[in-house]
Length: 618
Image (cartoon, rainbow, N blue to C red; front, top):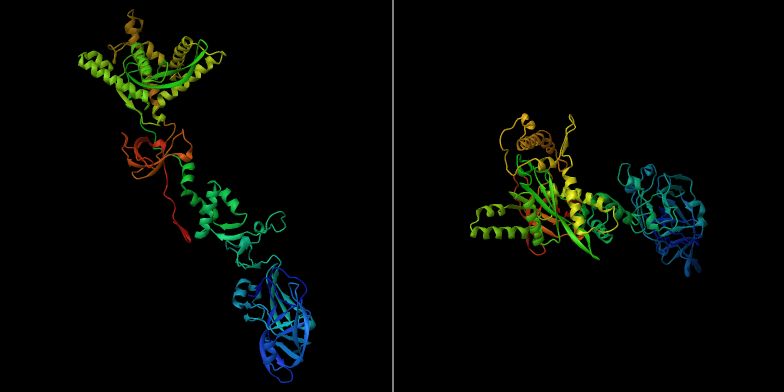
C-alpha cells in the first residue's frame, strides 16, 4: 500500500505524517491521433497544476510548446524547469462505468519523481472488511500523471465510505474509487480481529514499519511520543528476552513489576510479566535473594527428652549467653552466663563465667557437677569452647585411667553430642530457656541505673534460676495444681530409680525419706499423664519440603553475612536421620573445595537457569 513520509507535489502546503496517496489507474488518449496508454494518476488537491511524465507524452505522440516554469515543491524548495505545454488530452478511469474526460492544461516534465505505490486489494479487504463493496484494483508502480486543482472536477469526491478514525477512506471520483488515509503522527492503522491479544492496544504501524500501541495518552503533555505510543513487542522473541534480562540486571534485580514499568516507557511487551518471572527464576542473584530452605517435617523428640524416673540433669543441654556487664572499681567488665538445661524435667542451672574460653567453661562445668550431678550425656552447640571442654575431659579421663581410678573415670567419661554448626533449632530446648533468663535479668537490672558488681550479678543469676524453675510445666484444670521443675529438684535422690514401692499412706509416716520418694513418684506420674502428651504437637514444619539430593547446588544461609555474598556449594552426601528424613548433609564449597556438615535448615537449593529459545521458554 502507498504509504510515504512525504508527498512530492506542487502544493505549497507542508504535509507531514504517513499518507495513503489517492492513486487511481487511468487511461490516457491523444484526441487527435487516437493513441492510448495506461498509467497511474495521483489526485492531488494541493497541487495547482497538472503534470505528466515526458515518457507518456512520447507514447501518445503529443506535441506541445516548450516553456519555463517555477515549481514549488512540498518541502518549500523552488525549482525552475523546462516544461512542455500539452495539447488537449483525454482521460478516463479503468472501472466498468468509466467515461472520457477532457483535461485542461497539462504540462510534461522530464522526470515526474512521484514515489512508488503498492496497494493490494485482498490484503486491504482482509484488514478492513468494510472496503469489500468498493470497486478498486490492486495497483503497483510509479504514478506518471498528477492531476491538480486546475482539473478539480476530476479529483472531486462524490461519495465516501469509511469506518472509524484513522482507518482508510474510500472516495468515489469521476475517475473511479480511490483509497486514502492520513495520520499526522505518521501512523498507519492496522485492522485486528476482536479476540486477538493486540485488539485492546489498537495497534498502528509507524513510518519505520514498527507496530505501536495507539492508546489513550495522546493528549498527555510533558512526555515523549514513545511513552504515548510504545512499540509492541512479544516476550517470546529471543532478542526481547535479552533486552529484558539486561534491563533487569541494570535495575539491580528488582521485581518484575518494577522492571516492566521501566520498559513500558518505550515498549509494550506482550506476556512480559510471565517471561520476566522466568528470567528471574533462573537469575542467581534473584534466587539468592528469594530462596528459602526446604525444611523436612519436624522430627521426633530425642529419647533423652522422654526419659522417666531419672535424676534431674541426667541428660543435659548446655549453652553460653551474654555478654553481661559488671562494675569493678571504675572499670566495666564483660561476664557470660552458662546455662545447663535438664532435657527431661526442663529445670535449669546457671553459672557465671569470666569469659568464653575453654578453661572458664570447665570451671563452670565442675561447679555444676558438684552442685547437681554428673550427667550421663551432654548436648551442646558446636562452639570451640565446648569442643575444647570435650577434649579436656577426654584427656583427663585417659589420665585417670592410667592412675586406675575407676570411679573418677566413670564420673568424667561423659558422652558429649555436638549439634551441627548453624543449627540453633536443634538446641531449642535450652535456647528457649536462655530467652527466659535474659528476660528475668533485664527486668531486675532495669530497676537500677548503675551496673551491678560481680557478686550482685551472681545473686541475680541464682534468683533467675529459681524463678525459671518455678514456672509451671502444666496446670491441672481439675485441681488447679501445677507441675514445675522445682518439684523434681527438691524431692529426689541421686539414684536413677525409686528406692522401692510406696503407697499413699507413706505421706503421713514419720519417715521423711519415704515421703520424699512418694512425692517424686507422684510428680513423675503427673509428668507422664499430663505433660508428656503435650509434646505430641508440632508447632511448625508440619509437612515435608522438597528433600535435598546429592548433586544439588545450594547456597549456605549465613545470618552473619549479606545475602548477596552467601557462599555456594554442592551436596555430596545426604545421610538419613533415625526417622528416615534428611536433616544434616555434607556440602562441598565451590570457592575453596572444603567439605562441611550443615543442617538443611541453613541450605537453600538453587534451581538451574531456564534455557530460553525463540518462541518458547524451556
